[in-house]
Length: 390
Ligand SMILES: Cc1ncc(COP(=O)(O)O)c(C=O)c1O
Image 1 (tube, helix red, strand yellow):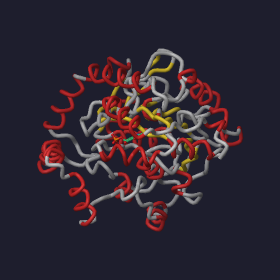
Image 2 (cartoon, protein in one colour):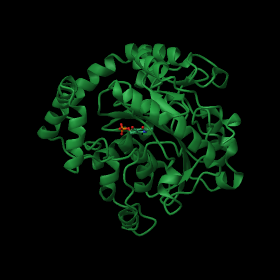
Image 3 (cartoon, rainbow, N blue to C red):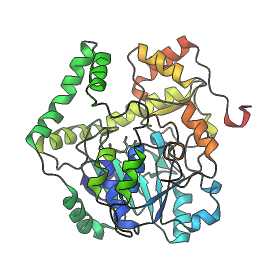
Image 4 (cartoon, rainbow, N blue to C red):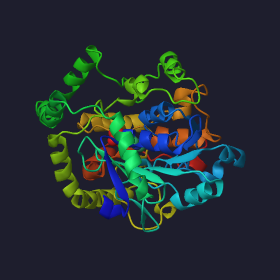
C-alpha cells in the first residue's frame, strides 16, 4: 500500500478503527465533522465515539457524492474536518474539498474503504487528505484489516502508539473463528441453508441488523455520549455495541492466520481490481446506470456499481430469489435515521433520500447475472432526479 499510494501506511485491524484514530488525532473534542448521510451507520457511530458532532452534507442525486457547493458558507465556517466517503468507489470531489479545507485550515480525512483502486484526475483516492483509511474487507475480501495512510510520515510513531493502546490482544478462538468462517458459510450456501441460518440467528437474538440500519437505541446512545465530561471524548468501549456491528474483531490484534490470508489476498489485488473494472464497465452500459457525462475519465474499478432503479426493493427481492444478496444499502440517510439530537441535518436532504431509495449497489463481479435478473424482471430505471415529477 505504501508503494501504491506513495504514502506512509499503518496497518489497522479495521477501517473503522483507523477512522477513529484519525478523527481523534486531527479533530478537537466537540468539533463538527462534515460527512455523507448515505454512509454505513457504523461510521456515524465512530464519529460520535470520537467525541465529535456529525454534520450531514448535501449530496449529488446521481451518484451520492458530496456536493461542496450545496453547503452554506456559515456551515463551512463551523467545521473542524471533512470526512469523505467515496461511496461504492465513486470518488468525492477531492481537489475541491482539499482547496476548501486549505482555505479554512481544517483537515481532510478520506474514507477510502470502497475506493481502493479509484482515482480523481489521475491521482489515487486516499492521497488528498491529511489521512486516509482503507478497508481490506472490501475489494480484497479479507474480512479483516485496513490501512491508515498518512500525508506526514513523521506522524507514524504517534499513531502507531495510539493504535496499540486501542488493540485487544490476539485470541486463538477469534483466529480460529476467522479462519473457519468462509468454509462454514460456503457449506451453508452449498446446502442452500442461508435462509434457515438467518432465521436461527434472528431467533437467538444474534442478528444485529433486522433492517438496513441497525437499531439506534437513542436512550443508551445519549447515555454513552454523556459518560465523559466535555471536552474529553467518551470511552470507546461505551460504543462497542454500535461500532462492532458486522465486525466484532474490529480492534483485535491480528494473529498469523489473519495476516497470512490478508497478505495472500492483497497479492491478488490487481487481478481483482481488473475484474471490478471490467464488471463496472459492463454495468455502466446498461439503462439503469448513471449517464457517464457526469463522470469523465477512465472507468473506475468500483466496489459496487450503484444502478438506479425505480423499484429498488422489487429488484432486491428478484435477486434474492436467485440467491444474490444485495448489501451495502444505506437507506434512510443518517439524518433521517438518527435525528437532530445526534446530528446536524443536511441542508438539502431530498437528493440524498432519492439516491438512497433508488440505488441498487451491484457487485461488478456478478454483472452478467444481475443484468439477466433485472432484464427478466423488466426493472425500470429511476427517472433522473431533475425529471422525477414526484
Ligand atoms: C463507507 C465505509 N467506510 C468504512 C467501513 C468500515 O470498514 P471496516 O469494516 O473495515 O471497518 C465500511 C464498512 O462497510 C464502509 O462501508
